[in-house]
Image (cartoon, rainbow, N blue to C red; front, side, top):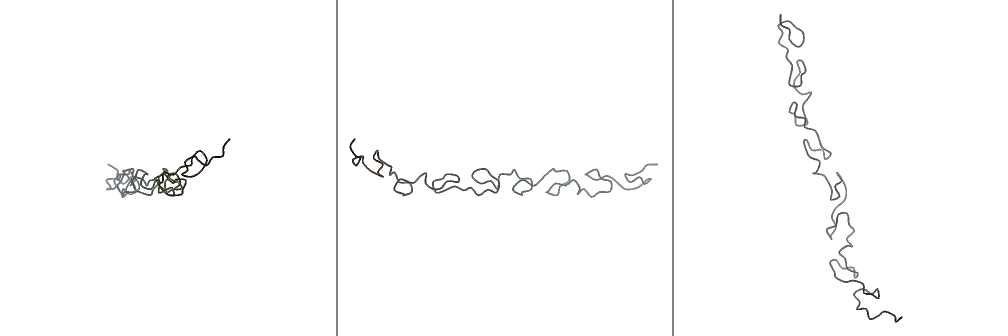
Length: 109
């Protein structure tokens, strides 16, 4: 006589997609609910995701780094500020260490 997977002669029990006798296929289902898909939650808690949807600008999952007004990741907004404190200003220190100076105020040596 033939026995089913439960050992019952001529029984109707069969293995499911997860190779479980009389199972419902859910024991090997991925996070997408599909048996045997292998889908898992990524670091961003996205089913089947690639882990990139929650990266900050520094590449840290769920991190706090953001671009500043100078478009610098995790910057403090000073890299595009001139010596006069104005964003995107071209003001620089001259050789006398005067902001936007012309070099004429240096003490003679």
